[in-house]
Structures are given as C-alpha cells and as structure tokens.
Length: 399
Image 1 (cartoon, rainbow, N blue to C red):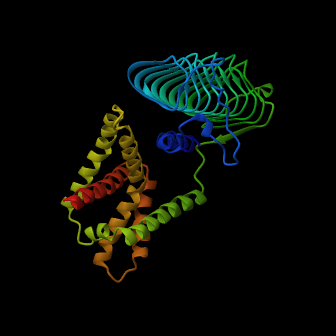
Image 2 (cartoon, one colour):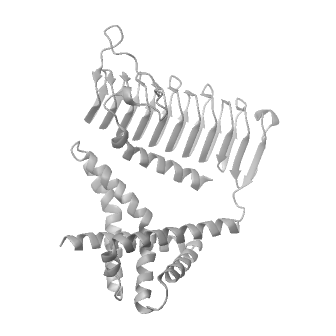
Image 3 (cartoon, rainbow, N blue to C red):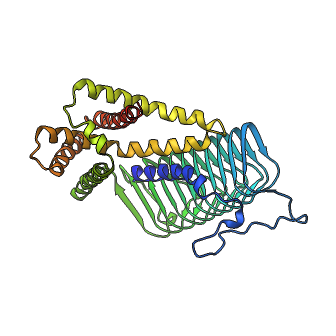
C-alpha cells in the first residue's frame, strides 16, 4: 500500500505541473464541467464587490505578496509567496516558502514548495509537494487534499478526503475531516473525528482518546495494534504487510513489463527504425559504458537544467516540456534497454523470432529485479543505459 500511494501521489503532483499550461483559461468563467455545468462560481467583479485584475497573472521574484484580487488563474515562481486576497480561479505556485494567508482561492491550488502553510480558504482540491505542510485551524479546504511531504500537520477543515504519503502525519484535535483518510506514513497520529473511513500503511499508529472514526478502519503494518472498540464505528481490518506476494502479483508484474517492451518495440519498429538499426551490430563493452555514463549524467543533469529554466519566466514553459520528456524517458528506459539487448541477440541469432527474444530478455531482467540484492544495481543500469542510449542517439542524429 505504501508504494502504491506514494507512486499515485508523485504522478498526481507531476501531472498537475504539465496540465497547468494545457487547461489554464483566460478567465474563471470558462472553467466548466463536461456536462456544461459551472464547476464553481466566481463572484461578480463590481465596485460593490471587489475590483480585481482581469485575466491570468504571472509573477516571479524573491518575496512576493498577492494583496490585490485576481479574476483568473495565478501562476507564481518565487522564493517566498503570501496569498492574502481573492484568486478567482486556480493557483499554480512554485517556491521555497508559500503561505495562503487570509486569501481565498476559488478553484484548485497546485503547490510545490519546501514549506507550505495554509491559513485561508481553497474552495476545491489542493495538490501539494513539499517538506512541511501545515493546514492551520483557520484553513478550510472545500475539496480533497493530496499531499506528498515529509511532515503533514492538519488543524483545519477538510470537507472531502485526504490522500497522503508522508514521514509524519498528524491530524490534531479540533481538525474537521468530513471525508476519509488514505495515508502511508512512518508515523501517524489522529486526535480528532474522521467522519468516514481511514486506510493507513504505517508502523507507528496512535489513535488518541479524542479520536473517533465514523466508518471503517483498515491498516497495514507488521504487527497489530490495540484499538478500543468505541474508537471505530465501522469494522476494523488489519493487513500484515509481511505477507508473501501472491503468484498473481508476480504474473501481473512480468506481463506488464512484457507488454510495455513489445509495445515500445512495435512503435520503434514503425517510426524509429534508425534507432533500432544503430544497435543492430555487436555492442562492445566500451559502447555500453559510454551509454551508461551519458545516462547517469542525463539522470542528474536534466533536473538541474529544468530547475534553472524554472527560475526564469521565459524558460518556464520550456522547463515543463523538458520535465515531461524526462519523466517519459525514465518510464520507457527499462523497455528501451530490453529492446536494445534483444536486437543485439537478433543480430547473432537471425533465425530466432524477435518477439521470443524480447520475452527471453525481459524474463531474465525481471528475475534479477525480484532479487533484493541485485534489484538496485540492475535498476540503475537499466535506467541509465536506456536513457543514455536515447540521449546519445539524439545528439548523434543532429551531427
């Protein structure tokens, strides 16, 4: 459960960065559901209400404060940001310290920051990635909370569900959670009422005397904990996370890698034959090492370049595109390495069907990935070699 929740949250946080440029509108009045119904109503901007800047606002700098209302989306790239007024649509915030003070965000809030403090109101969902995230007692979240952080502290109101992966999760006395809690954390402490279900993956769970779970309580841990019957109004379910992985899980894992490898091969065979032909000849050890070194440099260098580009407004869109391509290459690096190795074998054994070679290479590498002693090293080699091979080919093609 811990790995699944962490993976889901990371994907969510990365997807919203990309979607910020795709789904941003020129005004909050265009934020409609697929059925044509308005997702949320933006207050009419009049002299009797508030006078707001019309359209989206882009800001960058050191310490910035949103003191004037904005009738649109807010895009911010700053060292520090304080939102103390009305935002008519969504807020996309990137920085070192971000605080939603007395401000109100009518839409969703997407935040990546080291420290995040929410004192104000977000009418819809919040998506946060950071070190320490605080939702104070004056805060009100009108939708779901998605947080990937080291520390998540909740004292305010969350009207829907909480989804989190954190080192420490604390929901303090006085906090209001009208939905369910789905969490993976090293330490969890709940000191208030959770109206619906609670699902936890943690080795240290504390349900205080103030805790009350209105629905079911499901938790995954190495050992059971003593839970008073009056703490949970629904059923209590314990899952031992040391249970052996089922055969079905192994089959699905292997089948997924096979399907990915064959799918990528089919695409490359149709549109990227030159890339495949590049590795049709015998691959020397030196050539493999060069690809691994290039891949290692790219693995570290591309994120650094992305961060540098993000520090400038002009390079923001380019950095998002680069980040998306980087993520895509990481996801495909295993399959690319498998295809290259299968193609080398095809050159040595031309009579053997390429699909059978793909299956054979995938099986061998998958088995190595199941051994805890070899899995880390094999993973690094597969990622860096696949990534390096693509980067090397791209630069070679430009020459």
